[in-house]
Image (cartoon, rainbow, N blue to C red):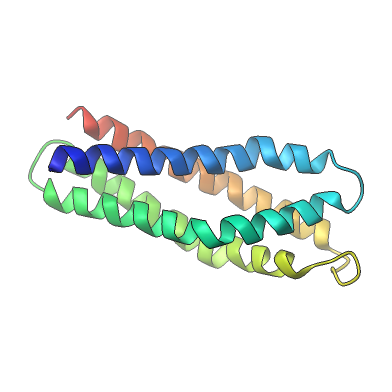
Length: 149
């Protein structure tokens, strides 16, 4: 049962990393290459779509990691898993405090009502997102290392 938990946790976090990496390094570049307002409209649509799924994915990843850490507390690799869970907590806090507020504003913008600094706000979101991606990659790396312990 514990082996299944370890594999499921690693796969769930790995898939989340893949999605967020793709947003950062593929989707954002595609959107940036679109003409005029299209980038902001694409970000808004993506925010509405992923904004529904990602809270469950982040919290689910954190919960799975926490269960794994508790279940293996006195075994090899527990510190790696606990550290990974700590990093996932950081990613959730970053999301709630830094990324979600910008995303929630962006989801409501249209060419008629968006603020003058909309591009700056999207760039700020991207910078925060890069940091969050680095944090979840680190968590995924630690979970993967803990698999072989």
